[in-house]
Image (cartoon, rainbow, N blue to C red; front, side, top):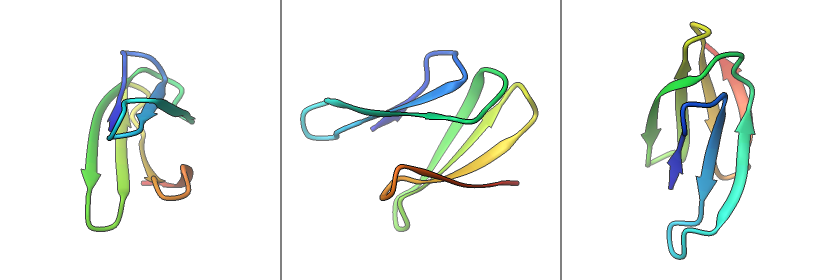
Length: 66
């Protein structure tokens, strides 16, 4: 489970027990949108800083900016 709270971070939680796992950091402005591609565990995030970032949720790591 992923979410944002209007901050520059993306919060990642365990889907079974909602335990907080990690904050993904990289945007310079508040996160405004999240899209999850389930078949690859890839997360796309957009922010007010006009950036789109790609994240690998298996590794909890930043991949690239689009």
